[in-house]
Every structure is written in structure tokens, then in C-alpha cells.
Amino acid sequence: MPELMYGLNSGLIALVLLLSMIAAMFGGRAMAGRRARRTSEEGKSQTLAVQGSLLAILGLLLGFTFSLALGRFDSRSQAVVDEANAIGTAWLRTDLMPDGPREEARALLVKYAEFRAKAGEVPAHQDARRAGMVATAQKTFDQLWALSAETARAQGGPAMVAFTNSLNDMIDQLSARDAAINRHVPEPVLLLLYGTFILLGWVLGLSAAQTGVQPVPAVYAMLLLIVGLVFVIIDLDRPRRGIIEVNQEPIRALANQLAEAG
Image: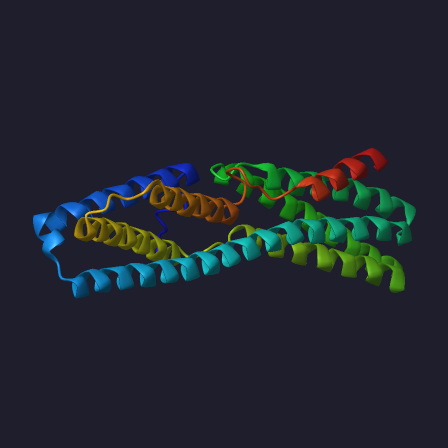
């Protein structure tokens, strides 16, 4: 199922949500009309009860979605550190290789680390550019693996086994990091949130019409807070864009360090 919201700007989604909730409030008041003030006390109590229930449901959905988005953000951050550690371990184990293959392996590791660092810095909308860097990194890894296999067949011993194992860890972390980037909050959850917001705005407008009391500034402050939370949730959930971004410094620092050492 194609996702419509994932490609939209986070600020635009938050603005549309705010305007939709305000429009729903005025729509609820308009639909109630003049008959709203003649609503029985039981009817008004029922509307207030529904309003309280919607706020509770909204709080639950916001908490669940925020926790989900924050967990995905943390996993992407950890994936950067894990991949940097895996590449660094492979570099250290090149000390166990013979002189000729060692220099070639280090040159390939420098190239690999640089492309992996650049791939994490590419903006989200430049998918083709990032895919090209990932493909180049994978080709570089294939060269590393071929070199390791050739050296292991020629030299053998536990040293080459250790280096080969580090390459296994390195390619595993590549897959894990790329999978973490593409993992985000399912769009149906966001659409459910949006529907709950609109319904809450409509009930707030209906309640204001029935009681004859205009929404106080605190109501609009609550709407702004809700929209702000949604913006943070969406921004956390979208890597390589927006205000909150995954720190790429661990792998960038490693790439620079290997380039200097190589």
C-alpha cells in the first residue's frame, strides 16, 4: 500500500492538522445551530462525557505513537554506532593480515567507510543518490570479501578467520542500519490520530454551541500543544529530514580517522 503522508513536509502536515481542527470546531458549532442552546442537560452531559473520552483516547494514541517514533529514532541512532564499531573492528584486524593484502584491505575499508558516512548524510528526498552510494559501498565490500577469501585460502589460520568474521559483522550492520532508516510509524496509525483530532475538534465546537460558552484561550493552547506533539512525532519518525536528525558523527568521525591513517 503506497504511503501518501510520508513524502510530505512535517510542518505542512502540522499546519493542515491545526487548520482542520479549527475548521472542525467551527463546523461543530455551525451544525448545532440555534437548537443547541435548547439541548437538555442530559444531552449536554453526554457531549461533555464524549469530549472527555476523546481526550483520553487521544492521550493514549499520542503516547503510543510518540513511544513508537522515539523507539525507531533510538534504533537508527544505535545502528550508526554499531556500524561504525563494526568497521573499526575490521580495520584493527587488518593488522593480522600479510603486508600486501593488508594495504589493499585498508584502502578498501577507507573507501567503504566514506561511502557509508556519505549515504547517511544524503537528504531523504535524494533517494537515487543515496541508493547509488549504498550500491558502491556494497561493491566495495564484495572486493573486500574476495580479498579476504583469497588471502584465507593462501595463508589460512585463525587470524584470517577473525578478519572474515569482522567482515560478516560489517555487512550485517549495513543491512541493519538501512532497514532502520526505512522503518517508521505505519501510516494507518497517523491517519487514526488525524481522524481523532478532527472528531475532537467537532465535539469541542458542539459543546461550545450547547453551553453558549466561547472556547477559552486554554482550548486553543491545547490545540497548539497537540499539533506540536504531532510535529515532533513525525519529525522523529522521518530520518534525514526535518529538525530532529540522527547524529551521523560516529561514522563520519571514523571515516575521517581511517582516511588519515590510511
